[in-house]
Amino acid sequence: MKSSTKDQTEGRFHKEKGKLKEVAGQLSDNPKLEAEGTGEKIAGAVQEKIGQVKKVLGK
Image (tube, rainbow, N blue to C red; front, side, top):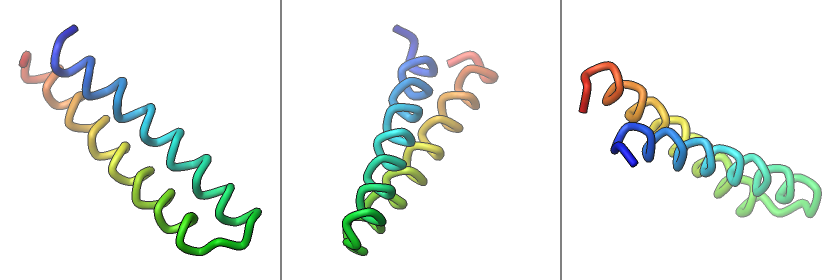
């Protein structure tokens, strides 16, 4: 698998995982879990963008 495709796939996975943690934190009234989910969601979005840039640059 190309590096760009791998980054995009892993980024999407982390975004979805972060969304789930965020919602779980809201439902369980756990701000720490909610913040962890938000951070993971942002990191996933960044990783997905890196994959898109790599694809454009041909890496």
